[in-house]
Length: 327
View 1 (cartoon, rainbow, N blue to C red):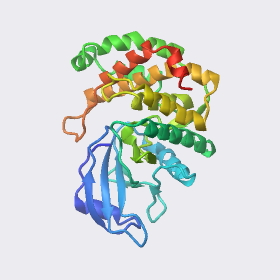
View 2 (cartoon, rainbow, N blue to C red):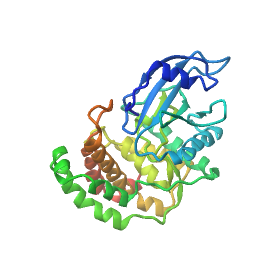
View 3 (cartoon, rainbow, N blue to C red):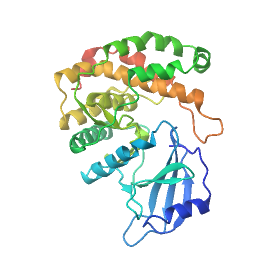
């Protein structure tokens, strides 16, 4: 989440008037994230209805032709009782609208907070919730190809000069050259697929105590390797934010929560180490590209790609049995 486009109160009030949610009371920009502009919206509401929503304007790295997939997935998972926000449709039944040539959507606001230092019980609940959306999505008919696979990571790095990457950290180009070719060559495309979240970081999970109340920000969701989604979530949750500290207790709880609902096949378990290295490389690639290409005027904090290079080094050194003991 971020704010690239600034909208005045009159513009926002006119937009909200197309929904059965009452009149606009307030709107506050949300600075986290890198891809879209987002606001926390409060309205007067209607009888028995919610009064808080998230308004998203789609800005970067999202093909608006794919919005029916993203928003339809939210509605499908919400109908399957998964902890995800439903899309608020306007009075004409549309899941999204156009505003000044850009597409916008109003999304249900869910209670809860994102945790910075998860407990094992919280990590187990996240693993369980991830398995639940994989299972629930089996009846979701739409498909979307993942546009951030190994070749795409390579393409993103190719758009960043060595000088620009070295300016971030002198070790960054060397790590890419060391790990990326093997990931491209060894990627396990034969594994079972699902509709995956692909970006389930702690700031995309809302919790009340040990209970998951919301999985949010599905705008990288796609059809890809199910165990890769577990690896992405593992990389996001099992380390300190800067990637310098690995938490084995969180790792074990997360994988245990997932496999209690959706056991891994022997082939998926065997592939977890390379999938984890791939997850780390994927976020090193997008963070590098975004660091170099994010406008200085954007209300958004740049994220350090070296936090995932450190994860990559850890996964490279981690013995296979370290994953196996958690399955």
